[in-house]
Image (cartoon, rainbow over all chains, first blue to last red; front, side, top):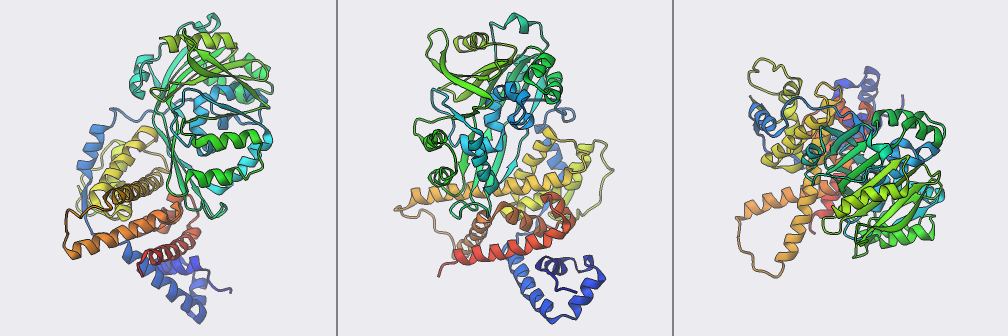
Length: 373
Length: 180
């Protein structure tokens, strides 16, 4: 029999009976394993000793009362709606192209890759720069994804609300009062929802350059709220099953989402933003994307939105009666959907109006009503 | 109901509550606090973390889910690690702010040494990869290999290897931080 590996020897220290008889028999007759065991046991004892904490007791019942007082009444609701996200729809599905735009600020906040590269600073600019990228860029950035172990603390589930007012209360944001809803949308069912503050971490692992290893980027985004005109559940099902954008749009029917949420904010526990930029820019990506990454810590602040050229387009524009609110208009390449994204420079809140079966003037009209108030 | 900070609650148990969340809470609260306590070395803050974790769980998860306990342990260790990292940053800032100023309070030497040891350990823990710090906190707070594996999403057979590596890494970090 081969010698016991370190893991087995470590377990032997804690749970000797968990190892099978053959393993223990080998150990009992192997001086090399016994010698390694002693070193492992010494390390274990020392580590345990340095992490020792004073004993204490807790009052679980009193704690339960505190938690129940702080928690919403009733049992925890099971979220039934989900915002369409870039990840859930998949980059490769042409049918999802329409909803790439619909992912809007949600895509910024929720996709781990986006989280780690796009929003190193809280949005503070008056514009929303966009960056058109290619599939090659995205593949280059996949390397970066392999460098980090990503964990998400929140989820993208919407908590349903009975009204826009209730959604606003849940999100702690002003109530959304969109106007100029297109006639084709106005008759659709309306859903209201909110999403709490989401968090995620990306910890650079041993695949990453040494300057980054051990650094943890922590992302916080939200809370946010949304009003969705159209049948969301039907859209999710139909969108996943469709084989073409036209089929998806036909099955889904006209839809419009109005979203408001606090933009993503990322903090780093170790390597500086400069270090992170340096290694990102060494990837095999376009000059366009390199420039966007290089500007990520521009003192003026940025919220770069990466839009794949294969699926969507973006153009700058303005909103509001005075035309002073900079915004980015996005659309899928098939012309089936349109959206507009902007940031309130005072509150750093990201807004978006996106839809399927609507055109750019229609989403602009809705967005104008929100900007002008 | 009082519980030791460990895997085995002590004392007489009252009748089991009917609500699944209540049952889960009473069964796991002690362990969740123990996990956070092992990271933070501060019982009061550990209870804050446990409350935050249970509230988060209540909002998002089903109390009867099979993964509930593992979810809670993992959330506790991550939340606690985030807190010590935040604490480190704050202390660095405060140290920087205070540099050049005369110390305002002089503690007894022993208190200083204990605090310093505790801080060094927590600093070292904060520098470890999350998985390494997690496996140490989870195991040392009394969870079995099966529970640790479930919380970390790895097989039970891997826990020993993770622990061994984490202990080596912790020793290295502690040595690095020890003044010559």
